[in-house]
Amino acid sequence: MDLLDGRGMLNEEVIQAGVGGRWAVRVMECVTSTNDELKARVVGETPEVLFAEHQTAGRGRRDHVWEAPPGQDLLMSVACRPSAEAAQWPRATTAAAVAVCEAIESETPLAPLIKWPNDIVVNGRKVAGILAESCSPGGRVQLVLGIGLNVNRECFEPFLSEVATSLRLALGERVHRPLDREALAVSLLERLAVRLFALESGFPAILEEARNRSALLGRQVRASVRGVRVFGRAIDLDREGGLVLQLSDGSRAVLTSAEEVRPAGEQGGFWK
Ligand code: BTN
Image (cartoon, rainbow, N blue to C red; front, side, top):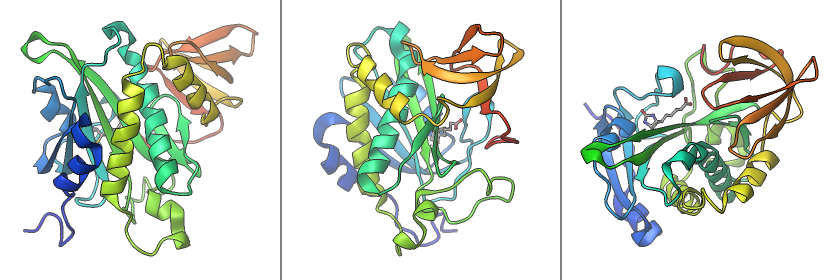
């Protein structure tokens, strides 16, 4: 059976040539999860990226399943050891979210926003998700960052079609052929190389870019803070990228990325 249904596999050589020596690039047809594959490998001096056309056990945050039709989207993970100390690695989700937006902006006329902490949305629908994990294969701590970007997919399961989209669907009549996945991949890796290695001194600038592209700041949201449901207005990102809420009693709460948030009034969500 042809997993790719006649579609060409991502071209490893083209992506490698595009990023030069900044990343060691691998493309595989089928893996369980690109995150799991890279978590088992000790990364060397050169950061690594693995793309897969199909995942049999693709994961999102909170152990949700991430599914994508083979050969149409970007399913990728990068493994690296950022120069910042490990305590600052949680900043990587914000850095990656900015990098994903920048890549979409450079390759399309779309205006993506960050739905804190790890979703990228276009026209209110999710187009990408980020899953940051750390691991220590061989005793060496490293960061693995998975990104699922819906590029050329033209249909979604009924339960997702209201809340998810792809770049191609969002572009509508403006494109008449599949988007160039290799060009997007190169652009994304270039942006990631800049942002992931600026987690320390470059983080204020990353935060500013994240604030400018926030889908939540200024909006009423409902959230679960350490198990307690709260309502408030999202007013800022704190210095670590936490979401600052102004609650109705005038107090403030800061959400860490482990907590769940939704715009008030929005039913359901990408993950049911
Ligand atoms: C989320 O939205 O919760 C994060 C989704 C992350 C999905 C990507 S696809 C490539 C990489 N491998 C995985 O198993 N997950 C990430």
